[in-house]
Length: 288
Image (cartoon, rainbow, N blue to C red):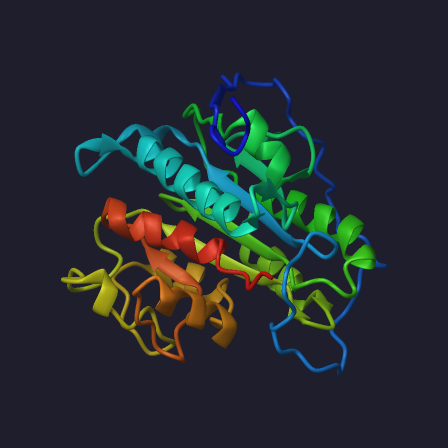
């Protein structure tokens, strides 16, 4: 059976304390790219020669075993991430051939940060390998995960000048333990390529992010700078989220989601559908 017929043959990874932990730099390097005065349009199209670069930061703390709907939170994330990868496979397939239009890193974090893919992989490689299985662990060391993402971006950005602006998609279900991740996230959002600054999206799995539940996600306008949030940690994550580029909003509209032009890249994961919507947003880079 070819990869196109079976794009997501799932591989299991059981994370144990101390296994596969990535070294995390205590201080950021001084020589990473800074914002410049170039036009930031977020309109460059991803293709096999200039693929989109996405980093997934996935919270695998112990609370991810709690239910969301009729599944555990971790299973909802697995299903939603798998659906997003399938969407990337579909958008990268033309004439029966799967082109490497996306390059992806997957970092799970708890007490340590774990590289689930063994480095950055192209979408065709992930299609052959499958999406790793996530296994809940203990604490929520979010700052360590963002430091590792920053380090990876420092390595990658010099070669991405003519590429779409990279995206960091962060999923969490609780407040961070340890250091504050917000200053690191702000540094990441200052990194840039000519297409635009690095984007950060946050998916916050919680029962009460908003004062009122979302009746119909397809008609929801999104989280705006003025939206009232029920939790202080939700306010922090909003501050760590990029404005939604118009090109991403147009792709979400094609998927029947009507987000406002002033929305930020933050999704309240109060239902499995909203979690899935968040991961769909991460796959919304324009391609050709």
